[in-house]
Structure formats: C-alpha cells, structure tokens
Image (cartoon, rainbow, N blue to C red; front, side, top):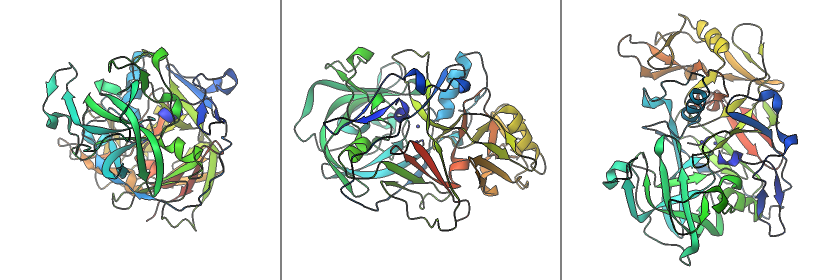
Length: 452
C-alpha cells in the first residue's frame, strides 16, 4: 500500500541535515508551515521545507519491479482511515469501503536482508521497514493466539540482526481497524533496488494482528523519520509518545549516506508485471513524449486522534482544476496521493458531474459506496490539472469491470464521492502518470503516461 499508505513520511514539518549526516525532522509543525485555508475537520495541512541533501556519491539508475496484489482488506489505505476520521467528525462518506475487496490494492517488492531475500509491501504511509521473524505469533484483535495462517504472512526471515537486537528498545506499529505488529529492532545490511545500506535499523516482528495476502512478509515504509515506531523499553505493548525514539528509516538513510539522489519515483501499471519503483532514479519508462509538471508537497496530518492510535500523514497536493466535458472546474481541494486506494474520490458535486457524463450515466450504489453503470458504457474524457498541465485519465481506468454488482450486472466507475475531504487520487489516476516524491526540492513531479 503505498501510498503512495505512497504516510508516515508525511509527519514532517522540516528536514535538515545534522552533523551526523542523519536527516532530522521536526516532529512538531511550525505555525508558518500550516496552510489554514485548507483546514478540514480532523486534518491539518502543512507545507514542507526542501531538503538540502548530502551530495550523492553514486549516480545510479536503479529500479525495482512492483507486483500488484489485491488486498483482502482495505484498512491500510487512505480511504479506510479517512472514512474513520470523517465519521468521527460528524461527516459521512467513504462509507462502505469494505463491501468489496477491490477497493484496496497493495504493491510488493523484493529486498535482501543480511543476504536473505524477502518480499515486502511498499507503504508510503509509514516510515518503518519490518519483516516477520521466525518466532512470529499471530493474534486476533482480542489478543488471542491464532494459527500462523490466520495472519496471512509470507515466509519467515530465517536470519537475525548483525549484532543482536538493540537493548532497551522495541518496535510497535498500529494501523487502522486493529492491525498491529510488535517486535525488536536491530541492524542489518539491506539491499533494495541495487542500493545497499550497511547497518540499517529495521524491525523483526515477533507477534501481531495482521491481515496479510500470503505473499509478503513485512513492510517497506517510505515516509519521513518523524513517524518511526521505535520506543524505549522491552515491553512490546508500550508506545507512549514520551518513549518514542526516532531513527533514520531506509529511504532516509539512502539519501543521508549519499547513496542516491533525494527522491523516489513510481510508475504504476494496469499490468502488474510492468510497474516499477526507483530510488534516486527513474523507472524504465519512455517519457520522451510526456508532459511534465511539478507542484509543492503538502502534508495532510490526521489530528485529534488518540495518541496510541495510528497517526499517519499523507502526501498531498492541491490540483488547479478538473476537466470532464465542460469548462474546467476550479477549486482549492486537498488531494492525497495513495496507491493503496483504487478509485479517485472527488468532492460530491464533481463526482456527480463526472459520473453523469458516462453514457449511460452512472448512478450511486449505497451498498458499495461508489458509482455503477453499464459495463459497456462510454466514459467521459476526464483530466486532473496540476499547475498548468492537464493529466488525462485513460478511459480504461474510469470503468472497473473487475467490480460488478451481481444484482444489476453493472460495473463500478473509477470516480466516487469523497465527502467533506480530504480527497484521494488513487490508482485510477496514478496508473496514468509517473510520479516522483522529491524531498530535495519539496515538490511532487508528474509525467503523463496514460497510454502504454
């Protein structure tokens, strides 16, 4: 779930390079960074400061294949969390995100930990890298022990930390809907996309409540270090804020060690065998005829939540407008970029307007919480304008024939209602662009890529 879930990387208010060359992040936003005009119940939006990066010693062109997995449960996607926050603040949309499993997707990559290859989920919504230890115990939400199969994790890691676990330190991360993972932290040499980080701090999970896919064995967090999940002490249940021990997560270490340029780039695909991610480079995608644009990174923080609850932040942008068969609709709406969410969630009036342009028009289905129309319907021409460039969505991504209502035989559209916001540009949009999160410039870059 990347998220693009590409997020804990969003817990950042400011980046700086410390004398120790570890990237540091302020855990508290400064008032000047908050964008008050975008305030919504339960959320705060902040500007990020560009990073002055450590000069890269290696100009490498690395990339790694992404494998798309249908997630059995969507709880780690932005849409699931936003639904919880909206309902807690008296709103109501994102209502039935669990009605069908196609609302959430996950992407996995292969990484090597102390010489042992592991398959892990890409998660742009959290900061930690963790893998399942050989002693992992599966538990349900009532803390009762279950069979290993119940958690749906892949193969166990058969190795260990380089020098044993870090003393008086533990790992605990909590996600939405009761998921959590606990364990110990230590150091390993981690190789990802041809880049090796020596003595990288990672977590070995020894227990948890997890709704896995029977393929992946952990998570790769791509967020900033302000939301890492290390805590003082040996009690795996303690995660009080005053016990937090920030550390440099994998992507941050790559940058601060001068191994890569300060960005990662994602090229999603309708075909799971074609997607890829690059760290400090570009995926193998022909962009010679692509339109290019960039816009400032904003961070959407979830606020007013229990301190012990999952508190991710999300990469967020403010599009200039939307095109869908009529003059451009303009509005200052915050949109989260999330690879773990399948659909595009728009403000209600926009969602209604776009779905009315299908031939025949799409109608809202309250059971699914999305719009449906004839499976042979003709989608409208739909585009998202970012700064001065419009990024068009391929009609293939506006009609999801994999999600069909058995009663009517109708198919789901790629556009749904995001309620009070924030809104989401999910996989239906992201499969039409190549997107780069550049912490060096503090901007998100886009290249058009709707036809392939």
